[in-house]
Amino acid sequence: MNLSPDDQAALLDLARASIRATLAGAPEPHIPDAATLRQPAGCFVSLHEIGGHRLRGCVGRLDAKAPLAKTVAAMAQAVLEDPRFLTDPVTLTDLADLEIELSILSPLIPTDAPLNFDLLQDGIYLTRGDRSGCFLPQVARETGWSKQQLLDRLCTEKLDLPAATWRQPDSRLYRFTTLLLGPEPFVKKEISSI
Image (cartoon, rainbow, N blue to C red; front, side, top):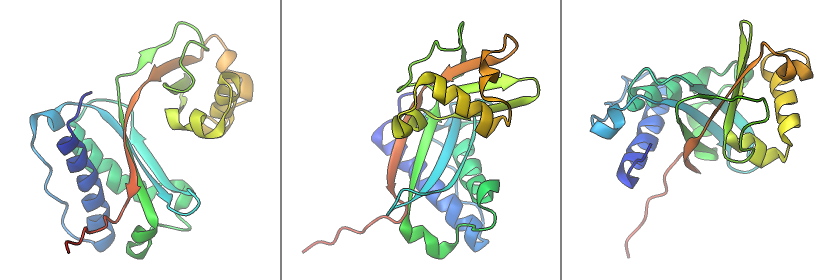
C-alpha cells in the first residue's frame, strides 16, 4: 500500500489520539476520511520505551476487512489491553517516555514451503489446528534469528506448541510485508521559532 507522507502522519496522529482518548476516558477521535485511508488493511500498533526499547504493547489485526483508518484506531485502543502488560499498564504519564510504531500489512500470501519467505522483509503467520501466531518483520531484524529459529520461537512463544510444529504437514505458513510508520516519539516535540 502506498501512503503519502500526509496520510502516514494522519495515521500516526490518529493512533496517538485514540490512545490518549482511551486513557483519559474521552470520546474517540475523528476518523480521517481520505480515500487512501478507507482501503481495507491489517495493522499492528506497537509501543516501546524510548530509553531501552522495552516493549510496552503490540496488538494488531492481520485481516483486511475494515478500512485502514478504523483498524488503526481500534488497534491503538487495543494495544492498551495487551494481556502481557496488564499488571503494568501504560498510563497517560508514561506517554512522554514511549515511542509509537505502526505496521501496515499487505494481504497474507500462503507459502508453498515452510522456509519460503524473506527473513528480513517478510512477516510470518503460522496456523496449526485452532492455534495461530505471527511475528512482524522487525522481529527477525532485531533478534538476528535464522529462519528456523524464528519459526521455532513462533511455535513456542505464540502457539504454545513444540518448536518443531512448523515442520508438520498440517501446519500452514503465510507471509506478508509491512509498511512501517515510525518509530517516533509518542509526544511530538514542538518546533519553536526564533
